[in-house]
Picture 1 (cartoon, rainbow, N blue to C red):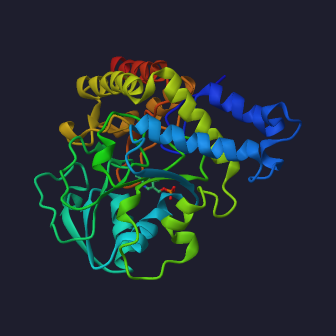
Picture 2 (picture 1 turned 90 degrees about the horizontal axis):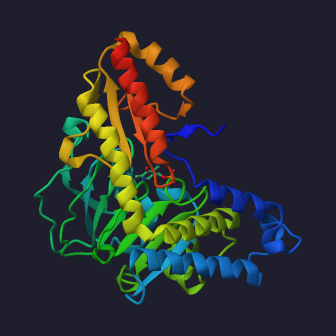
Picture 3 (picture 1 turned 180 degrees about the horizontal axis):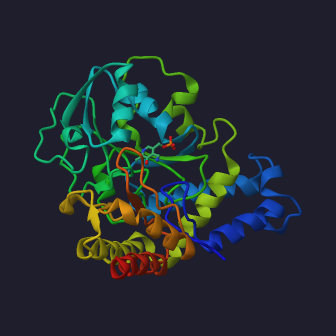
Length: 354
Ligand code: PMP
């Protein structure tokens, strides 16, 4: 029986996507060959890559606006450095909202000067800083839309006077935003899009070509763009499975439809966290993520009982990250609301037992 999968990533994918992907591993397009054994230069795979890239721009509402979508490798972690290599000339501003922002800052600092425009580190990142200024003479501003570990999410993005770069690894395709506010978006596939192994990068082309450093080929966005995201062998399985998920999002009615479902799930989850006296939410209410709900069990003596009940209910992947402790319910696009309802039932049953 399929478990209720609350894993933070890699995480749940739509069942129909898994079925189609597993079929393609055995026999791709009924061609008598596996997706994993054909050339990435074959027409069949080039079509997959082109379709996936086009679907990204279509779903984000960025068609015809000067953007290009790339499917790269090395995880979002490689983007921490790649962004700086391609865009950092003198100084950039970073919003520090958690572990992943810090890592992005650390990598960029290897190349040049980084200024933290604001940080919530002193409160263990339980909120999103607001009302900060972004200096006009910097090269770019970098932020993390959703903090996977702490369960906070930026609800209102600043009107940045300089190019805005955003790590959307854990909430891409989950809510409607004006994506044209961003000049570069990146996201590891393994939460809302597909298996681990590819990273989506969406770039407004006109921000490139402005730094004086020499950029190694594999790190050069321009080169990846001019090669149609096929400068080197792409991760074919991850790209194909991402394409299937993008088609699935489109078939549901696009990001707006998915967002409604995500809001319903988050409401069910947070209502229980707020009403049940045994649990306490970690993130400040106004900044709560609709993707990752972080919470603690107030009475340690009930931990074992709670965890046994979770196991019996088939709930998996609920452990919080060590820097927050407690629990984290990751409710990515593919998680059915029934899974959230099952979790909430277990939480309220624990209350009636206590
Ligand atoms: N940014 C965010 C917001 C993440 O959640 C993660 C992974 N959990 C990363 C970056 C790092 O991604 P990767 O493991 O693909 O390098």
